[in-house]
Structures are given as structure tokens and as C-alpha cells.
Length: 276
Ligand code: SF4
Image: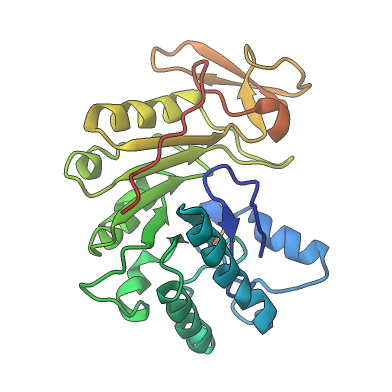
């Protein structure tokens, strides 16, 4: 959809279609649904239709690929911000096929395929044991329950980079079994945005960072989201009090995504796995 995406961890964003159905707690305040509604599209839910795009839209990654080749650089493409590539809907199969061909035609781009349905990957992805070198495969784990449900499906696939997006981070997570074994190469963490956002306890993000540091896994702290620690920004009016690991009070303020920023313990965490 967008060129030069503002999401810090990607250069471009591409959507093969718009529309989806909610599958877990992380979807509760799905920004994509809200954004589509704002533009007049009602595309969410099992009985809703999807929005598809013209050839001009599908040409964008070809142009990004040519630019990257000219510059001698690799570029990351996030796919998809307004859909889930592995949604269980057979009407999407022709569009998925088109996406697989596009990925094959753009070797200068690293495609970040992020899904909340990793159990569907074996049935829907065409690559079996031979994944292309330009696909980074990821799943969302908002809490321990979903980590244990989804990550075993993710690590079944020999993608060159396997990653977990812990956003919105809604609970404490121990990823040790997968970070220690080499199952994961990259962990992204972040809090929820928007006025109804659920606060992220800082100790959950700190624990993920420490697990990654211990096991040599790249860690990217994407954002605090709507809530951040009070000592970091005092502009928020609403506050909430959580507990740290010792049972002490931790005050968070509703600062808003921009003001909350993305510093964790005084610095940005922008680690990336190595490109092939
Ligand atoms: S899977 Fe993603 S796009 Fe689909 S409802 Fe959940 S958050 Fe929204």
C-alpha cells in the first residue's frame, strides 16, 4: 500500500488485499479495521468481502525492487498491514498465488510475512522445504498462551529469518525455549496504540530484551504505544499503576504514541537479523 513506510522496521508496506477476521486478543483493537472503516470500507468478519487492487498497485514492488537493485541495497517489505496473508478463505487463493510470484520476481526485497495463522502456512505457502532467500516469516505472540500455540507452527518452516512480533504485548512472555534453540532470529516488541489501548508493563518488554541478549537474538523495540512509564513522559492526564518484578508500584501515563516514543531503559533497540 505505502512507499517509504513510517513503520521503523520496514522500508515499504504492501497489501495484496484488504480485509480480515479477528482471531485472538491481539486483534481486539485492530487498527486496520478502524482505518478501513474510516475510508468507508466494511471488510472485517467472516461474511465480509475483501478489497482488491489494480495492476498499478501490484507494480509497486517491482519498482521498489528495481530501485533497490540500482542502489545496490536490500529493502524490507512488510506484508500485510491491512490483512493476514494466511487467512483461511479460498477466494484469496488466486491473489496469494499472485503474491508468491511477485516475491519470486523481486529478489532485492526481503518480504516480511507476518501472520496470526501460522497453522495455515503448510497448506497455503508453495515452498515446502525450499523457502526463497527473500522471505522472512513471522507470527504474533501477544502473551504466553499464543506464543505456545503459534511459534511451534512457525518454526516448522525453514525460512531464512523467523521472527515473532510481540505487539500489542499483553502479558509476560518467556520465549527461551525458541531463542535458545535457534528457532527464532528476531523479536519485535511494542505496546498498543490508540485511546482504548491496554497498557504494556515495562517489565514484559525488558524481559524479552534480556532473553534476546542472553541468546544472541536480534531485538527491536518498536514503540511504547499509548502508555509509557511516568518518568519518561509526564504529559498524560490518565495514569495506571502496575507492579514490577519485586511488587513495587510502576506508574504509567497515557501520553499518546508519539510522545511516548520508543526508548526502553534510555535507548532505542533497533537490532535486525542479517539479510541473506
Ligand atoms: S489478524 Fe491482523 S488484520 Fe486480521 S483482525 Fe487481527 S490484527 Fe487485524
